[in-house]
Amino acid sequence: MTAQPATQPSALPEWNLDHLYSGPDAPALERDLKDAENRSAAFHERHAGKLAKLDGAGLAAAVADYETILETLHRVMSYAQLLHAGNVTDGEIARFYQTIQERATVITSQTLFFTLEINRLEDAAVETMLADDDFARYRPWIEDIRIMRPYQLSDEVEKLLHEKSVAGKNAWTRLFDETLAHLRLAVGGEELTLTDTLDRLTSKDGIQRRDAGNALAKGLKDNARLLAMVTNTLAKDKEIEDTWRGYDTPAQPRHLANQVEPEVVDALVAAVKGSYGDLAHRYYGLKARWMGLKKMDWWDRNAPLPDDAARPFEWAEAKSMVLDAYGGFAPEMADVAGKFFDQGWIDAPPRDGKASGAFAHPTVPSAHPYVLLNYHGKARDVMTLAHELGHGVHQVLAGPQGLLLANTPLTLAETASVFGEMLTFRALLDAETDPARRRVLLAGKVEDMLNTVVRQVAFHDYETRVHVARRDGELSLEQLGDIWIETQTESLGPVFTFDDDYRWLWGYIPHFIHVPFYVYAYAFGDCLVNALYGVFQSGHEGFQAKYFDMLRAGGTKRHKELLAPFGLDASDPAFWQQGLSVISGFIDELEGSLNTDG
Image 1: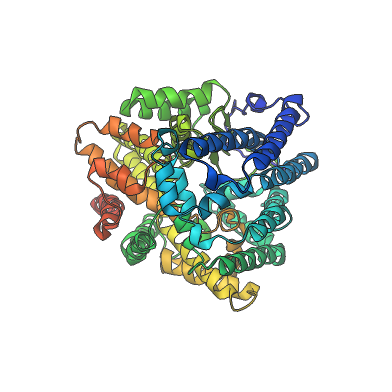
Image 2: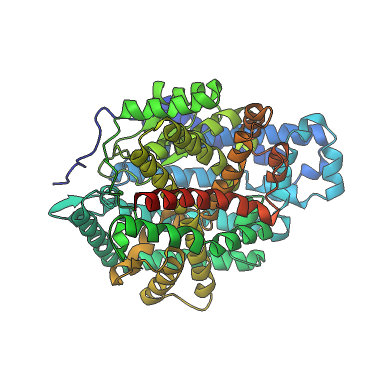
């Protein structure tokens, strides 16, 4: 029997996917698939091999038709993804999800030619077409596509890669997800899911944390050969495709997709790694002293602090805290976030088979986003709610740009989410008058920031080293464990004891599998928000209006354009140190507080 978490609050909302479709067998879903199929075939017949003959108005009309097809298809795919995330272990749902992926791949094979053919147009011809006002609207999307021109393969190879994805990398990703969703871990005489086991690592009881850590490590070790095969296979698959396309580094395609220069990312990574000692090593040394320890076991990294009453936050309280913080910044922000609660856009309860972690899924502009949480009532869960609602607000505000222009690069997609967290944290901190409680809040924020900045850059380091090493052959379990231990020890510092059990924890990080080289976007977003929030605190005139303009822009502007109104420039090496100094300042305050207490 699987135990329910003791701290799980009552009355948690579940999302209403009927806003998309009433069920997997809904007639409307099948009609939409057929419509997308018919439109795609007609689109191929009308335009394949003929784009060079169109003028700007003609190509604008073609892009609008293409967007309509994708809007319909993405609605179906979003429904399947959300249904699957709600119960990854349900065989019928998994079969439905796979079937939808396969049908969508066949349909989009008909439209694949479109972006490939756009990239074969000469620059001068495209600029002439962009003189048309209707087509000019799509300039950011056209530029995003054409930045990939040097790495585009022949139409036949592109079509082969596209069609084989459902039986290749997508299938391996599904295997990873279902393996982790089916995990049941023996924790202190109870059988827990991965999500609930990870939650136990934040328990007030050190025995529970130890048992959870041991169970997590054992479960990952028992599945290590499968997880290593998934890792090795996907890394090799990526290497093959990257080589054919001519990318210089494993991370280059992600940089291009994120619309960020490699040197900007390199500066971020270098700044964070150079601050490991001042940030993570210093804080965790402080935490160990606070807990009365000379060394901490790895499973104590997220342990509550001695002064933390660790009371659960009921859902209604969490909702009020986040909406009040959002409303204190701007009523419009609270109004948009309030819809997620009022209209069934959130799925909060931890459940057997549910995907672990949290996300905000934008679905399509004609619908609305959905938020998935695994809410246990911890303070960290309140911050996660604030984070995902930040994504959701961003997605709602960018929606009017349309499907092709609403999507924001990952680096900027984390801005609104981390800003939402910061607003909630600052509201809580400003309202707290008890020194001990204030210190706990401050320490919790530091830990969240370290998880977002230091931990994610260490993940990026691990991922980079794995992909580079994979070029020399398949990586053994020992090699994967060695790289993990080396990167995590370097980042977290000497206060931790890393035993052999810790060698297996690379196995459950989903971003390595789902979106290679995603993780640095978290650090990018956190440091950016620290700088952005500093501008807000300084009383920058018209900040809220400029902030909403930034969110509404979606993917129509690059980071330089979006940050310029605030006087910020992410290409300046000093920019990253500005963001890291905020974390360092919080640690300074904690050190002073503890030293004062003796």
